[in-house]
Image 1 (cartoon, helix red, strand yellow):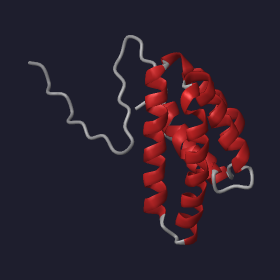
Image 2 (cartoon, one colour):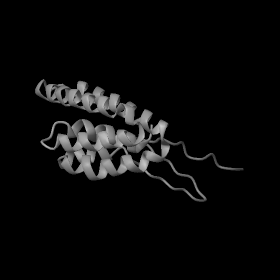
Image 3 (tube, helix red, strand yellow):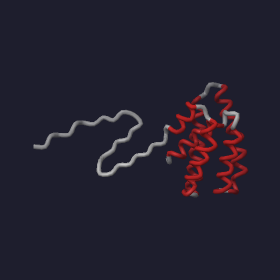
Image 4 (cartoon, rainbow, N blue to C red):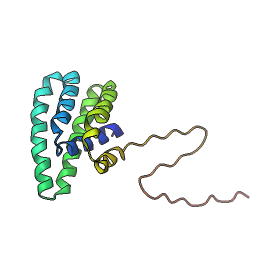
Amino acid sequence: MDPVTMAAGSALVAAMATDAWQQARDGMVALWRRIHPERAEQISGELETLRGQVLQAREDHDPDTEQSLEGVWRLQLQMLLQRDPQAAGALRRVLDEQLAPVLNQGERERAYSVIQNTTVSGGTSYVAGRDIRQEPPTPKD
């Protein structure tokens, strides 16, 4: 899954619990309106429902439900980008300009922590979310 999609899904769910949730909703609806206009109003309604679900999960101290909602919206965003891969830049702008600014520092760091960029030229790179174990090379005779 695209890292921007993952970050945007996390940020969207977190933003729904803020006072600026309408700004987050409007940014997402505008994105849908551009790529998939026939679904924009439906998405607006789904985002209203999402807000209620996020608020209920937080009231119930239920992080599992909140994580599940993130997964659902990550898939929604992934399908949107599959329809128009060129929209990744627009999604990144919604993330950077409308979702992330309304989050507290911890939520912002959590959303962006899924984005990794690695460039390797003429060598080997190992990227992992946790530990890497590697056996030492066998000596050549």
